Amino acid sequence: MKKKVLALVSGAVFLMFLPVMNAHSLENLVGSEQARALISGENTVLAQFNNLQPRLAPRHEAIAGLIESTLGELNPGIMVETLNLYTKPAGAGQNWSEDEEASLYNNLLALSSLAGIEYFSASRGTMRTFYETSTVIDGPTSKNPLPDPFHSFPPMSYSLYARQKDLTFGDNVYEYEFFNYPGAMIFVQQNITPLTYGIITAVGRNRLHSVVGIFDAGDYILVYAASMARAASLPGMRDRMRDSFSNRAEAVFKWFSARADRAYSLVN
Image (cartoon, rainbow, N blue to C red; front, side):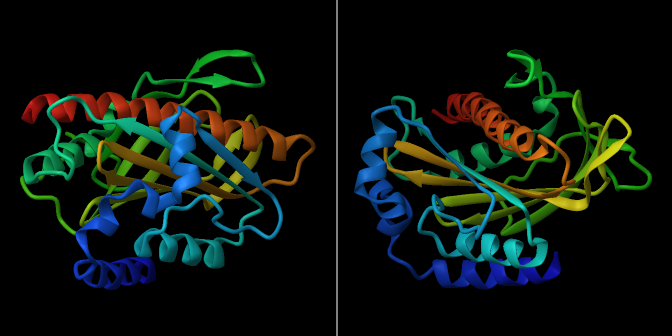
């Protein structure tokens, strides 16, 4: 993903010179109407299968460029976007302090904490474990386990591999790339191994990309997720993928909320 890294680094340099208010206004990120809906408790989900465009993406140079390049490279057949809002705890600053930013960043890197999170399975009509196991590893071939990484100061970009076993697609290796900007953190997950459903390859290698943007927005943190995939053309697969992406995005948001609570409790 070298091309994407270069594009994002260029975006970071540009964003450093933007007014701080642009990185911290919910209305500037999503518009006043969408901001009101999110504050009222409405979570937004949008699934697309044709003429895919990022219709819910926050107005942010880096994430716009990343999604555009992913769409061009992947040419996916499905894209599911979600928007959620996390309310900061009492005592948190309107803008991330250096300590809050570092704490949030390191809690995002704690991929081992994804083990055991649950999502609602639309096909089964019940809660189901998302990741049975989740471990950072030293590489996609050797797969030796490593502790969750830690950074005293969040770097502009950082990548790692993780071995994660979910009950739908089994034991697989993913690459994660983390990008840090003023008032924003973005991470991208893509599958290094093909995702199989029984004996069927549902999603080929590098054919699933999930982009998650986390934006400082005053009293809130805006969480945007976009999952894009080139999946097998099988009866019912499109609807299955749509429901899976949206429900799993909700599970990831709940995980983030718990990690954010922990991050703020450590510094405030």
